[in-house]
Image (cartoon, rainbow, N blue to C red):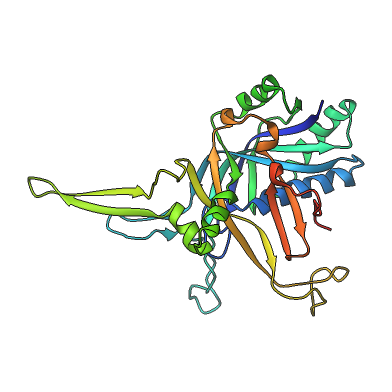
Length: 309
């Protein structure tokens, strides 16, 4: 039997998280932000003498408040910016607007290398770390419910139901790169395939009394899924050779320029899953194709590196 030890951090309320998940998408923070947060949590626990290894992470969204504004006659939304101090001349200082959001999320953290006897110590230290000005997705943690540790057998529906009841109502973010792969195999460009799944089409018609009625819909076809499909950033693609750069932050590791990887994801209710594996993500490095990515645990390729160096 295969068991997973899952640290559940319920209802993390995060203020001013980074909503600019890639150069051309805005919305729910990138998966790199959530796996980066749990990696940072592991390192802080290791520094305190707890030899735990985080191998996978799942994120459940309960609420998201994107900080944008659109007036009644506006076609596009505007970012709600911050009020920065005036410069020495009394003028408004120039700055790059940052997209922000307020979140209520729960995190699932699969742990290895710890025993049941350490559960209370881990929960206590995780609570302490989260209360010690730790950032998540670039935002400030305001409050969270007490962490729990659950042991879940992968094939046991009762174990999974015990977990999903604790995170309802909510939506699990999963990967749907299969939709992109299928569209591209049919000859579509990657960007066209992504836009086709997420674009909203507006149309209008005139009623018998002359009133104009507008309708909005997403393009649906018999072979297209009806779920809540969204674009998500899942990692980076190296676009230069590995080497050293002047004034690089880490002098001990090689540097390379990279661009964001964007694919499709889906928000799905927790009770619709059959296995805990389907809820989790982990790191994967494909050195041959210069990919540093977060992938769904049930799609991990065994012959690739499973975590960043």
